[in-house]
Length: 368
Length: 69
Image 1 (cartoon, helix red, strand yellow):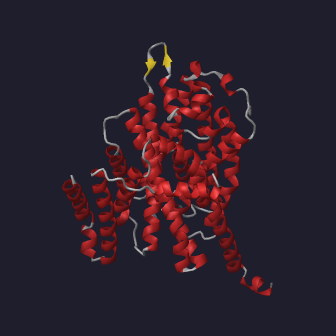
Image 2 (cartoon, chains in turn yellow, red):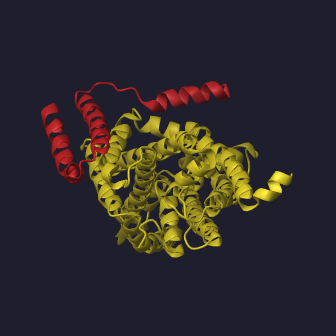
Image 3 (tube, rainbow over the protein chains, first blue to last red):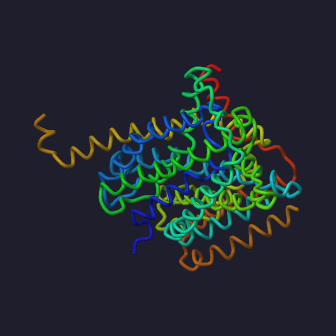
C-alpha cells in the first residue's frame, strides 16, 4: 500500500480538520467585524477556482507528487529551486500554527508554564504521527472530524440563549472595504493554506477525485467556519470579535444552561487541539517531504525529528508576544501568504499546462 | 541548562540515527546533525534569554515597504 495515497473520504476529512486548525481558535475575517460572515462567504467562493487550479496541477501527472512535477516541468535543478519557497511556506506555517496553540494553551489554561513546554509536547505527538505516515494522520482526522463537527454543532445550539441576531446589523455599515479586507484575510487564512496539500497529495484515484477532495473539503470546512464565526458574532457582538484574542473560546465560556451546563470550554478546547494536531502534522510532513526530495533522500521519515525541532525553535522566536502574533496574522500574513498561495502556483500552473500540452500533442505544437 | 539541552538533543539524535548509522547513510547523517545542531544552539540561546531576531520582523518590514504602508 502506498502510504501517500488516501481515499477520497480520508482526503476530504483531513482537509476539513486542516481548515478547522487554528481558525477555530483565533477566528477568521475579523477585519470585517459584524460582516465577517459575509467576508467568509466571499472567501469560500473566491477560493474555489484557486483550489481547482491546484488540483489541475496535480492531475496532469497522476503518478507524481508536486515536487516531482516541478522537476519534470522545469528541469531537475530549477525544479528544486522553485520547490524551496513552498518548503519554507509549509515550515513557516507549521511554526506559526504551533505558536498559535502554544499561546492558546498558556493563555487559557497554563499561564505559569513556559510556552515551549506545551509546544514541545505538541510537536512530538505530530512527529510520532508523521513518522507513521500520512495515513495515520488521515485516520486520526477521519475519527476526530466527526467529533469536532458534533461538538461545534452542539455548542452552537447550546449558545442559542446567548445569541443576539441583531449583532449582524447593520450589514455593510462601513462600506465594502472592510468586507473585502476580511475576505482577503479569510482566503489566505485558512482556505488557501490548503496549498500545503499540493505538496503531500498524489492524485487520489482519478483526476476528478483530486478536485472533488479539494472542493468538498473547502466547502464543508468553510461552512463550519462560517457557522462558528456567525455564532461568535451573535454571542460576542461585532466589537468583541475584533478585540477578543480567542473568540470561539470566549463565546463558549458564556454557555450557561440552568446553572447546570457551564464551564464547557474544556470540551471545545480539545476539539481545537485535535484540529491543530492535524494542521501541524500536515505542515511538518510537507516540509520534511520537500526537504528530503531536494536533498535526494529516499524517505522523509529520517528528517522528521530535526525538522520538527527546528519548527519548534522558529515557533518560539517568531513573535515577541501574543499582540505581535495577532498583528502579524491579520495584517502581514495575507500579503505574505498570497505569494505562495496564488502568485507562484499560478505561474507553475501555466508552465505545467504548457508542458502537459507539449507531452500530449508534440506534433501539433511543432506544426504551430 | 545548556548541558541538559545538549544531552537531550544528543540522546534523541543517537537513538533516531541508529538505522542511518547501520546503513551508513553519511550524507543524511551530516544533514541531520546540522539541523539538530542548529536547533540545539537556538534552544540554548533561548534558554539563556538571548534575543534571537525573528524572520517575521524582516518579512513584515519588507511587506510594509512593498505596500508603502
